[in-house]
Amino acid sequence: LDQWGNEVELLHEGRVLRIDRLVRERASGTWWVLDFKRHDAPHTVPDHREQMTRYGAALRAIHPGATVRLGFITAQGRFFPMDSTE
Image (cartoon, rainbow, N blue to C red; front, side, top):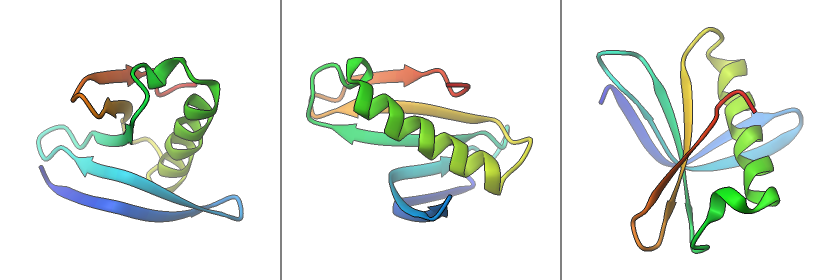
C-alpha cells in the first residue's frame, strides 16, 4: 500500500463524508473505498449502495482519472465489491 487511512473525512457537494477505510495500492495507484457494515448482504441495501456511490464520486472528484474501487466488508469478514461506476 502507498497510502491508507481510517475514518477519512471528505467534503463533497457540501456534505462531510466519512469513509471507514481508504487505501491506495502502490503498484497500480488504485484507490479502494471500503465500508464496514453489520448487514449480512450490504450490497443489496439501496441506502448502502447510494452511500458508497457518493464516496466513489467524492474520491473521483479529488483524484480525476484515478481508478477507484468500492467494496463492503461485513462483520463476518465477507467482502462484496461494488461497481465503481454506479
